[in-house]
Image (cartoon, rainbow, N blue to C red):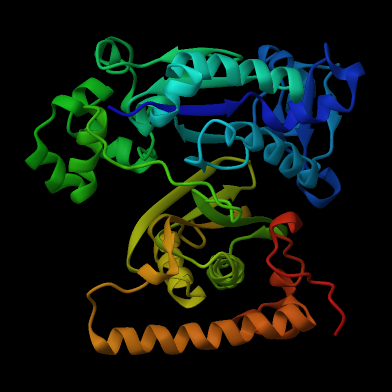
Length: 416
């Protein structure tokens, strides 16, 4: 049986900001976007702010109404990456099987490390102590025999806690939780499960597999397996090119948008950014999601799978736009303030096409070659040096897209 840890740095962005500002230690702190660019929402907060009712994604004004003494700080993404790397350097001293899951969390397979460092709980407690002493942050660690259960364990107790999910106790600890708490169960999937009368992880574990497959396809059987602790997926070995759970871009638009054509142009622009990062990391995606933020700051998203996996902006944008059309109706819905496109279910680019027709392979290879040529031009002359007709037609709405500059694949201000 495997021993897998899931380590999650608590309130990561806000906690990192407090490292350089000891005066903030006992104050409510929130990391926020730029209000002048319509990014005036809370990106992260510390526990003190959380206890005051401050929530991620709410407006700055709303947060200040709840917590008048809230200290607002701007994000420093380079600093977050540096601190994250330091934390993962500690993890790598216990095993080479370290799989990042975003910037602030990741899995460790310590099955073969017990002779040197002790059992999973002992290793987890040692990691917590070392990160606190050497970095100044706290982490929560789930210890279990599958990746899914280890992540649930790290979520159960926060901050600065170790939770053991074992074959003996997982039914008592995990099964009563809502199925939506489990990794890979998003809003749409949870709604489908609710329609089958499945509310908890225990309900999912005991559900009829045929019924789940009919409703959710192969993912239905996979989720049931996860809920029963039967997951067989391994923790990937760490490598310098960080393993992403997804690659995405989102943007707050310079004006509220209601036109489908303008939204389509933004989706294509974001898809180009995502596709460029996929190619840069030598990855392909078997899934895409699109997210909408309305002008009242409510949020909706949908996702779908893609076959075969792709690194093509054209494919990503087509699927994202098809999703967009399923739940946004021009003239009937509220104006949009922001849009996002993400690629998920990533794999190495060698897995781009498996067992597909020769014509499909030729088409994908031709399109990939064109995309890489565009990448080279943009790398040398800037992202805006070459544009599709779709973007040129909608310059007004697309020219100011920033998509969070720390994630841009190329320097938009490169010399031309």
